[in-house]
Amino acid sequence: MHDWRPICFTLVVDDFGMKYVRKEHAEHLVSVIKENYEVTEDWEGKKYLELAFDWDYQEKKVHLTMPDYIPEALKRFKRKKPNKWQASPHVHIIPNYGAKQQFAKAKCDEPGLGKDKKKNIQQVLGTFLYYARAVNLTMLVTLSAIT
Image (cartoon, rainbow, N blue to C red):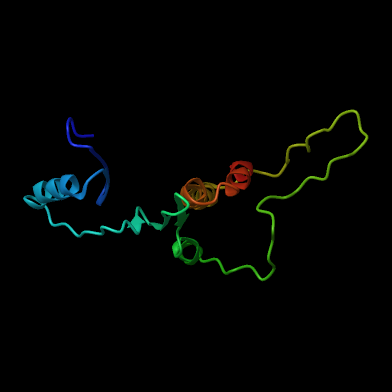
C-alpha cells in the first residue's frame, strides 16, 4: 500500500494485481515498474493467478472461474473424465433417525500406501486444494477426508 496514493497491489511470482481509486495513480505505478521490467497490461482485470474474473458492476459482484484448470489437472495425472456424473463431491452418510446417538464409521484397517503412491496422492490433493480454496469450497470436505 502506498503512503499517500490511494493504491495497493499484490505480486505473486510474475502476476501483479492492483487496486486503485483513480487511473492516474495506477498509471504512475506501472510507469515506475516499466523502467526496469517488461510489463503486459490488462486494465479490465480479466485474469490473475490462473483465475478468470467476470466483473458484475451493477450487482457489485465478481464471479471467479478457472476454465482450463480441471481438464489440465486430469490430463496431468492421466485421468479420464468419469462416465457417471456425481452430484455430491463427498460420500453421504445416511443418518440413523430416531437413534439416541449417531456414531462415526470405524477407521479403515487397510495397509498404508508406498512412498510413490503417497507422493502422487499428495500432488493430486495439493493441485485440487488450490482450486477448492479459490473457486469451489464444496470440495474441501472431500479433500480433507482423503487427506
